[in-house]
Picture 1 (cartoon, rainbow, N blue to C red):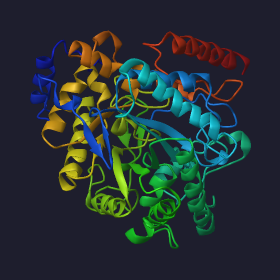
Picture 2: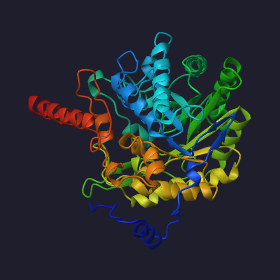
Picture 3: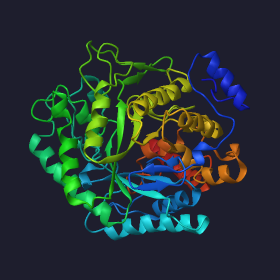
Picture 4: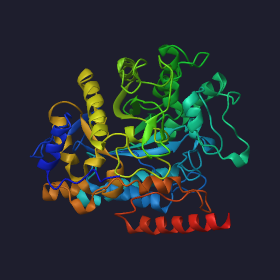
Length: 480
């Protein structure tokens, strides 16, 4: 496939955006992104953040490993004033891989050290950390839990795309059980208990992960589920309402609660066997699955219920929301516009700029509907060094409060520091969206069941790990 990002200048990028009839705007002068933003009772020093991006580098008991500390400390030293910590499981069986972080009663001290090292790195560079906000995302991986899938409901297309290790005898068919209401009731209490541990560990905020089609995200789209957690919008939001009520009763009043949500799940895609390009899987209309999806045209969003969800979050003391979309498992181009697909993916069915515009358009509509709620925007990494020019425009025009980057920060953790010093980001350090970080996430042929994930093109540590993964993958094929 041809290379998409060929722009030598901001004007080149603007010209291509205009030629495609897209609504993405860029500012020449950078100022607003470096101004403070109020979040609840706290004020952060700039409007640039780091998204939750897993490193798959914890110990098998869920404790942060050496590369976890290294990564977080680099974030702390980088200049972003919002560090949105990565997905951390609430239970050992709720992890997406065996090295995902898992917070529990026996490793609170190690997570406390993680937050302390992050802040200490920031103080070393910037003198103090009074305007820095560090949070932790908690999650249940649902149908993508690595030991066994925990399904909220059966989705005929997604069930076909749900990975299982056939050696363990698990088969996702119509008879595969969905989680019970009793399981979900007990899980509410587990989320509340882990929230207390996040507070004890000294983080500034907790994020309840409702995105990327993991369990809490899937609950929001559980239209075909029976019982009190499915069907109506009231039932589909019961879990998050109950969890927020329980958390608010347990944590101090000034502890910030946040949530990363999917504003648009999209529909499953599959690779065309001839072209390699992703194509939507056939589905019946009206579409009766997922969240934020137009049931008459599921390739487009319907934000009616998303706005209702945001109001519920506001009413339950949520002070910060990160807007995301899509699933990394079956429509990765929606959530992460890329140059090259991950190893289990497909060539993008759209130009990456179309995916960027979708992210900006949807977040913009939500921010304008809730101007007092700080929303954090996604979808910036593919723009490379020009992401700050787009962020400046979106913030200036009230389309977002904070612009944040995930893959981009893995590649370039000190992008804000360089922006402050040089007035721009360095082209030689930016993420180039070739999906090697995701490829490492997908690499399982390791003694611990998972290779650590990071930026292969920009960080020698992960270049070495990537070479090792390729070597072991080749040996595995030979042995077979």
